[in-house]
Image 1 (cartoon, rainbow, N blue to C red):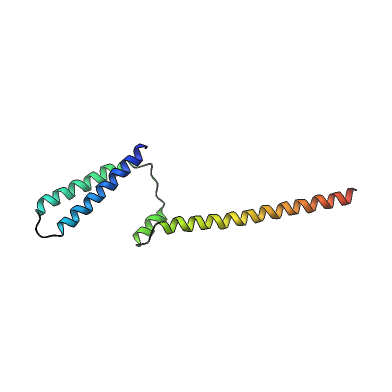
Image 2: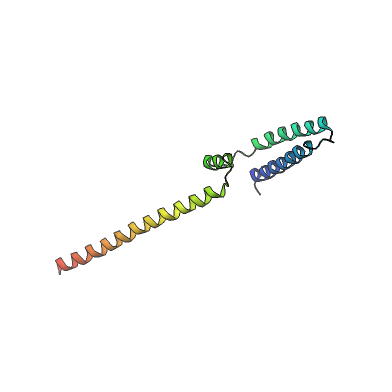
Length: 113
């Protein structure tokens, strides 16, 4: 596993830990000061770990979908469907040029025979 993915896994773990601390803070029988210190530590830890994940690129469209409360898999599905559609269009063009080539060769044969 490359180091960026290792750092990403550590960031994910830190996020999970932060969510756990936030959940614990929602109950009234906890040491608030201690949990707030832990929360600040985890935020700092996430920021430091995130700096090491520079080679991981996330398209802005995915981030916008997440911000809008949508599933990022929609982006992947739409991207794949667009690629399939473009591939079919390109295949149609290639097939058309193959047919044109065949007709031109037939026409040439007829004219020079």
